[in-house]
Length: 143
Length: 143
DNA sequence: TATCATCTTGAGACGGTTTATCAATTTCAA
DNA sequence: TTGAAATTGATAAACCGTCTCAAGATGATA
Ligand SMILES: [Mn+2]
Ligand SMILES: [Mn+2]
Ligand SMILES: [Zn+2]
Ligand SMILES: [Zn+2]
Image 1: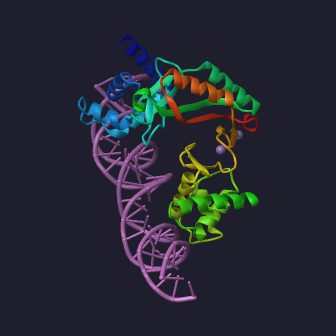
Image 2 (image 1 turned 90 degrees about the horizontal axis):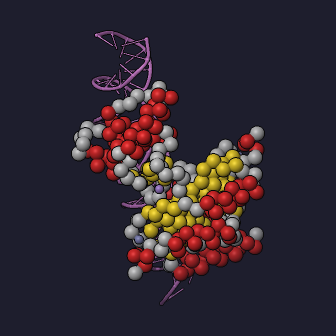
């Protein structure tokens, strides 16, 4: 709960810095967003329909994109729909995705990140972001 | 040129095995495809309009997907459009993408691949495929 | 070589996802 | 409290890729 407050403050700061306004919808969407690891706009739309039946899908897209700009979310394209990844109280991470059941496991590996930098340097690049996704079968789906 | 012939033979084999037919369009598209590393259907559509103004976009999509099934191409989603990666005479590889000019550099790094396996094993997964993309600025775009 | 079942093509309709539009509403600094 | 500026919700539009289907091409067979 205190974490929610902290993130609300992050949002507030971002809004202030960009002359944006804190609305009932933004608060509502943030609260719901912080409860999950990965979510699509469509899923949130249905989840929140119970709390506010008039909340529009466009508003959810707009707000999730706002969270991305504020550094609390990251858009990822695992399947056909954009997954908004909650990175607010964890840093960067990559994903293992089960092609059987769709389970997503998050992981971090400094050694891989270091080697990525090495590859980039060798090719004259300076990395801004990267994307690493490992697709395979989880232990359950192999049996 | 002899490489083109070799790939044409790969296509022929695939077609034979699946009761498909070798058409003028498939030959035309393969020849053009082998000339480039990465290409979108739309780009090929415009390139080939000169050689055959009646060649349809749907045919290009269908044919590039066919090349994927035959193991000569791999569909990748760098930006908004699907890039068809020519993997006919090179093995698996990953990519560095310049966010400034769009340049794509291919690379391979066994050590990263090994660490990926390690991560997967640690989480009970068996990897089928993976995707690693490094986004950043190339040396030219930094100046 | 002629036949013809089967596959392929091209044009455009269609579908799913995300963004743009815009009048009405809400926010918040003054 | 006021009002300029931002936001919202409804829905149209854009975008990309696939589907549909009648017309045409292919190639195994005789
Ligand atoms: Mn994640
Ligand atoms: Mn490539
Ligand atoms: Zn699984
Ligand atoms: Zn560049």
